[in-house]
Image (tube, rainbow, N blue to C red):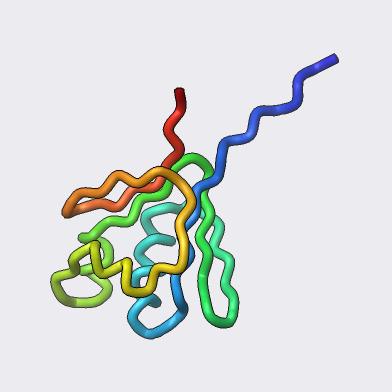
Length: 97
């Protein structure tokens, strides 16, 4: 009997859909080509196997101004995963033992 294939745990970020989050969502999509973007009427949920990275620089390129990653929290609905945060990156992943 063969073992079932091992699947990677998914992380996610869910954001409100509005004019402020559209460039953020575009930046996340560009930096995470492995991510799956699920669009709903009032929110976007972005799932990724193992790891999802939100880069300040990518967002700034799209919004045309300085961006503090703490601004994500204004439109953040939910996240799944452990968070590592610096001034430059917001990373979601699952820690393994």
